[in-house]
Length: 138
Image 1: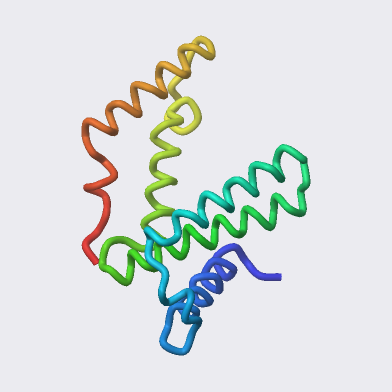
Image 2: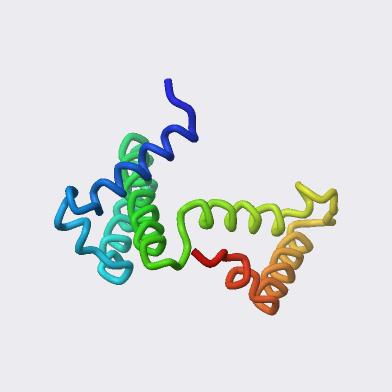
């Protein structure tokens, strides 16, 4: 049995091999823009599997989406923009920031209060442009 970390490292290694000179011509040729149509297609397939409660297919289609996200991250790393650990770090920071009722002991009165809090945090993030400033220069 492997750990989460080992599985992620293996996936990154596989994608880097696919994009290498010894890898797959199709994978090497891809750009972030060329992957848009595949993202849409795979997302539609995932939504269909979810609607049908087809759990084996949900797992497979989730993997296809993950593959595309890691591919986009790898292409972006190659271009000196960001890499997969940035994606993971930023989404984790965002989840913690947007859930102060879970991670910072902040309370809320009702569902509407929770939604208002979420929207306020999201608006503050946009104002501060948090996502542009958190990316290290590669």
